Length: 330
Image (cartoon, rainbow, N blue to C red; front, side, top):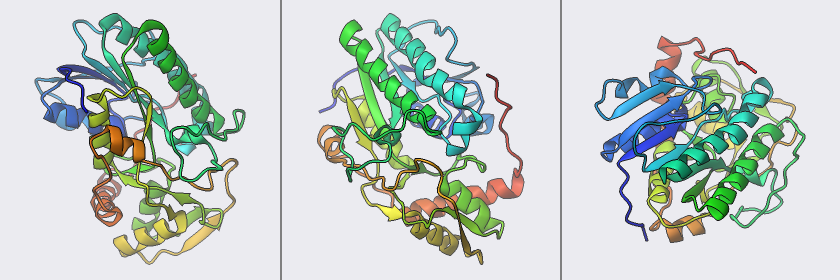
């Protein structure tokens, strides 16, 4: 059952990112005062443009791996800052490790100082290339710590370990959400993940590229369902990782075919070599979420979510074809 705790003033790190901006939107709708921090390495001001000027929204262009201070009271911190695209694992490896370690340390320190609840955005990559399917929160994972994906996998695993250490040693009130594959408006065109790639290629009439034969599975969830789960978890009394994802698996080839169908594209599918350590399966066990988050489960169908996402990509590819990414710094 939800724990009664007022959530009036909330800091969101990574607030200009894909998921972070949707979190900010939901918090504003719930009547919260929202402070968003983002260094705009992979986030975009366009994602938060609708909130600028809102009386309960404040944005700071800031890197949370540095000293972190917020004036006044804070009720909660949602730590969503991190590059998350496979394309970033080689492009931004140091930044990913720093925000998972130093950034998590700084946000936990601020939570301790402010007596605020901290919700960590973790991810299904903690399970690595799993030999258990579906993956429950009790599964410890199968991760290559020194592979290309290791910078993201281990950054999130370390962030979870530090979060629980602060909870046990300092009594910080924490929540951890393990996010499975999520899609929707505000994803970057050059994100590097399957759905943005497929939409970009299909809309431009290019062939859709599959890595491997496309038989590897993912569990895709529309962003609105994720945000509902995060909001419920933030107000819940459960401490520990909780899977938020769609338990309905599908192959990447099936998703590519679905995007071609929904866009009406004449594109074909071509294959490329599979990247190292690419997970063969990905499917959450959501029984814990259903139990502790008042029956939460995904509500938006894949087809409906893809149609909503299609309109976004058509607009962004027509009006804003260029990347908005800044060059990385070490």
